[in-house]
Image 1 (cartoon, rainbow, N blue to C red):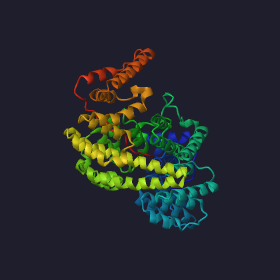
Image 2 (image 1 turned 60 degrees about the horizontal axis):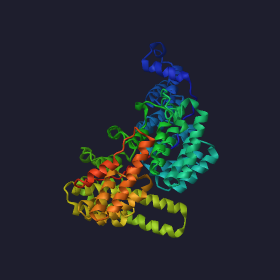
Image 3 (image 1 turned 180 degrees about the vertical axis):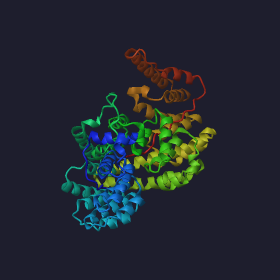
Image 4 (image 1 turned 120 degrees about the vertical axis):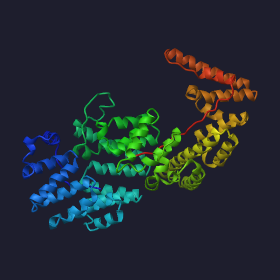
Length: 532
């Protein structure tokens, strides 16, 4: 929702005054309690550097000292709203009794109701505004987006832009609607514009410096940074690339952000950092996600992602038993049923039903020959499929650990209609067949995966190559086993030639496995959803 405060220009004076206030310099602050000019300037500066709590205190004093000045009442209510003190902000907004402030009061109250998730009340308040008011159009777009009506929301945002011109936050909202419509190209177009303008208009924000390895101080959470929408744009860029499995680009989007210290990071950035670096820094990632859950507000997907990551990394946590209220409010349907591991069957049933609906929708979309709709339908199905596979693998792992391979195979057979095109599923089916000495059937699942990566054979896990070789040998296909081993040896020799210091052990492991009992491999698919 849009804010209703006059824009301010950045300046060293505000930062200086804030630092003096923080240090308690009496020379500057001793007369503040009675000085209108000092209080006004200090409140202005607190607001400028996003310290809304202290800004509210300054404006509260001003409203008491000068009740005849309506602007102070506006700024006081607005500072409370920005500080997240919604009941206090609502109360303060009713003090705006000047007819000239009536529109501002309605807009502010609508924003408060929106943040309190009372969308019907927010809509009722907005409908008191003239329909041609840009803020009415803009904020109705926010309500439409919240209601899942992304195309209508996008049209509202476009209409607002025609009146208001370029506004970074508005461009971000348009990008967000395109992202929700799975139109990533259009979303990235608007994100690119936000970033390009931010670099050009605010070089002091040091965009991209961290990625280039330049050590630079924090730019702080200033009003300029907030108004640039750069943080939101980079987070959305990271989310899009993460979804497209461009992990490196997603990580660079986060490091391209204007530099801030850890304690200055917003919840969305902290969440995305944890998610994108989970494979290399899992402990740090879990700490960040757990920290977010202890805060008054956090991205709604945090709890669901944490549960799925616990499942993937086999981490036991009391969060599974202590998070009932978080389950109800912040976890989507699949994770809501994640009360305990023994309820996997119930979860799978729910997910399977959603997959059936999405599969039917995908088939119907193919008949329309609409490429954009088809692309969205495919992405929706694949995302739900990944969620389903996470739960499926966790359930199967229980029986795998008990060496009940027949039960694992049974679980996989029940999921064949939804997962037979997924490499993670196929790989684990191969493993469980291999463990039951069903070598011929195992070859049918291992072989397509290996051939898919045949030109870069060392990208395939050594255990997979070893199990395939064993399966060839156990089914009297020695020539195929030898050919595969020669291919591995050839690639290892090439790597040794190109990079003598690099060590590779695929062939060594294959030779070891051929002479040993089967290795029990288990592959976990990667699924975690998070966006700014």
